[in-house]
Image (cartoon, rainbow, N blue to C red; front, top):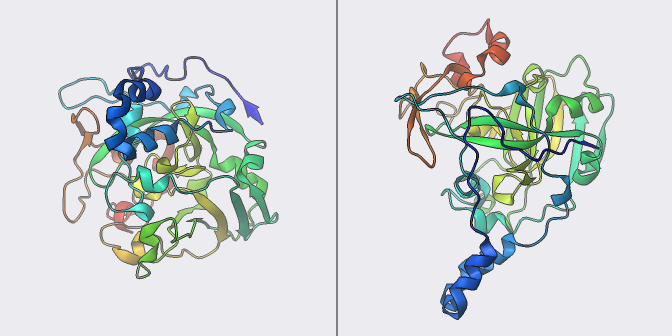
Amino acid sequence: MLIKKNKEWNNYKNITPEKTFINRRSILKSMGFAAVSSNIIIQNALAVEEPNPRNDLYPVDQNREFNVEEFDIKGGTRKLTTEKEVTSYNNYFEFGTTKNIKRGASKLITSPWNISFKGLIDNEFEIDFDDLLKKVSLEERVYKLRCVEAWSMVVPWSGFSLKSIIKMAQPKSTAKFLVMKTFLDPDIARTQKQDWYPWPYTEVITIDEAMNDLTFIATGVYGKPLPNQNGSPLRLVVPWKYGFKSIKAIVSFEFVSERPKTFWEELQPKEYGFWANVNPEVSHPRWSQEQDKDIGTNRMYPTEIYNGYGKWVASLYKDMNKSDLLYG
């Protein structure tokens, strides 16, 4: 595996670096025996301190090719979202419908983690996540994450381009869509016990979208391995689409010729459509998408078409109707 070390991993010129966070061990020490009544808090903090065998892979060098500049409605430069916010404000429907799913997600065992590649490809295979990491080159990319709920973050993901592993699979010419599925374990993921939902979580993008230079598989964040609540051990990141397209904890990649329905298409297709491209001119049925709120600062930013990444992806949709860009 090619790993580029980088001492200044948050050196994006248009983003203010994250402040150093208070050491959790110091917090516990200062709490003393009075913290016994807060046993849950202590257990969670200690759990974070467990060493991750993948720690030595990070940090990695930053690829600045895809950095974009953004200003809020008052003209202030966009800042990097803090690690605390990124790792504590999470949508992960398998573990609950609130943003506070960290404790539930911590129960998911992510090593070993088997991933399958199947379908219309010349090279079907299964591989453990740690073995896959030995075959790719890790880098950091700072991307804007725009949720369909009209909030956003700026996140320093570590990982590799999706197309680098697609090339390993060698798709056939008849493969037009890439189907990704997450794990299925209702004993750990409590929401999966609600069997009226179409589990496991499934997302689909076109092969052209998957092969785009922007499309990324994240395996880390803030110069560390990806935490469970953020989609460990690997998740999709497609920064020009709304966040629900960025499926977490992927266990399979399947190449198909016909477009299947995604998890949210099965549930609410008028609210969470297939394309899900960020578009200020196409409102969600229940709210406007003209602006989004920055998590952490609450500053408002004007929404840009394709989340500001149009120069890399607009050509993918040149023949589509405007309304199709969200709900097609």
